[in-house]
Length: 286
Image (cartoon, rainbow, N blue to C red; front, side):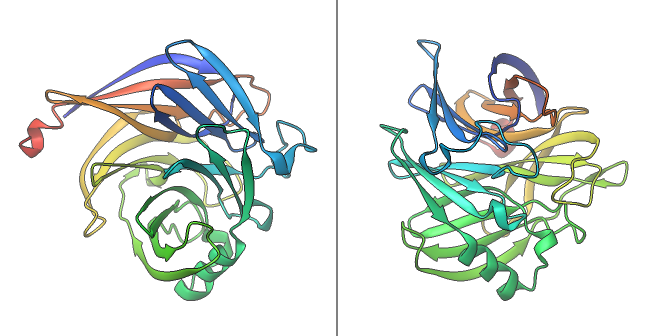
């Protein structure tokens, strides 16, 4: 496999943390951004969809106050933007109607997050949800292992679509490589045609709250039966890749779009890149 990275455009969200491409529209969240941003790719028109529950708050929050929206994924006709859970302030989610994202509501995820800690013996300092997807009534939430115990892994639970009733099933650790003895940690997940892809960053920190120097990022495919990496390749030595969405497949190549978090509160823009993985289909005999 070979990897090619091409910068596509910038967006007015410096802290991009998740993205979804649906019917030629790109939807984005930022970890300190109190809205959903949509971009019509063909018309090149961007719109901001304020989060109703946060309209009295600044559009861009300072680090200590932010909701830390890290995961964005599609559930039926909705998009769910999910807080990381790394502090009590960051335990809410926001459900947007895809047809009209201005219609959205807040969902308290603290019961689910606290159940994770109790059921699986995890410390609060190690909880940091960065991505997810839902298949039927089964929800998969991916934890970034940048806490003291480096617990990369996936929580699996069944729940209703209002997230008021749930049953915890498992927490499965996920093993990832290191760069210069810095552990790669999950930053997003993408589910397409029963296949699971992730991004991971090697950030020099053991704190889910504090940022660190980034040593590089990876793309990987996970086996959904074992949650082991079936393929993995380094994306870049410097970019902190935070979000991943599937674009398409052509011959032996697979295409994704990624977003990058520059961890700079003074910045005004974030960047979207095309990630082309060449030879990926040949390597698995497709």
